[in-house]
Length: 370
Image 1 (cartoon, rainbow, N blue to C red):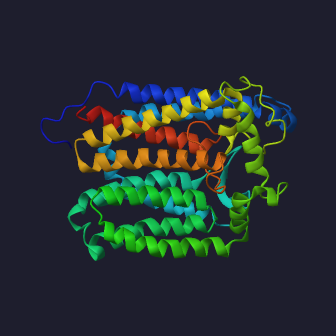
Image 2 (cartoon, rainbow, N blue to C red):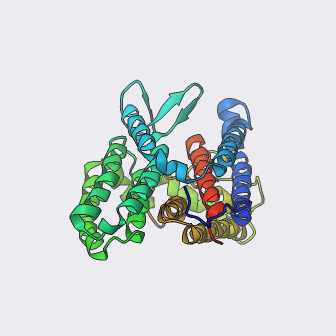
Image 3 (cartoon, rainbow, N blue to C red):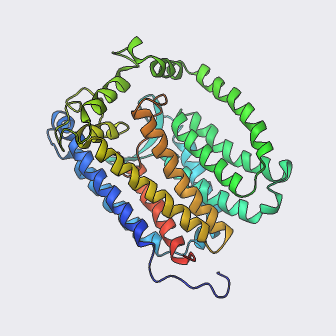
């Protein structure tokens, strides 16, 4: 399975493991702090979201531990099956009666008292398959017809299914992550430049085709034009971040979570974190993500084969892109997208799949020549 002379490391990257646990701890604490008031009102249980997040974290950690001990080359062997299952789930979620509609998007499938988001599975499934494809066909990647176009088709088919939900934020994360993998595998800049022009036209078309996206852009440019409508979330988010100052108002002392900022435990949890822990707390979390990115890139560079390198790069790229988008939205740099903050935001599918992905990354670190 591995070339002669490649020995398995006795342990995974401990720094990476510690960072994961620290981010997970921050996430559980902030989910409770941000959701206690809302869950007390809605469910008569201040710990409702915190308990569920702990359950998701436990399941995710068990999955991470198991995956961490599975040789990452196994994912190469089963990449076809994984991708087919992910496609079937993406198709199933579009079927009325199976897919659940939340926030205007049919993105969830109910499983008992819980729900799963197939697009989250597709992100890791596509990363695994694309890593295999690019490592097997790397000599063709510089060819527009033999390498670049087939890779693009592989990316845009699931992107199209995700847009039917519709979920532009998740689709953006999927596409950008895969483009990074294709570029690192040897894709030509000239191909990307031509694609970029078409992408701008297509992106504009996606925005124009959905009135709510136009409203989000207007709210981004001037949230005060509709302060009680489309501009409400970003205004309340900035109201949370501003009073946080340097040291914050103190853990649990947020005012915006008192029904001002909607669903503060999800997409805008970083605003509550900044309000309670201040600039120092927010910077600490961002530094943890930078450390995660550094260790992930280090593992990718030291992986024993191209498949491992691309797989590690895709996983860490997926997480970093989500972090960048989420925090940019919260501080008003880009329009609202609906992307959660990895490890921190409340959400079962997102947290479990993120931890599962970290298990793959940790396993690659066991073989990396670090």
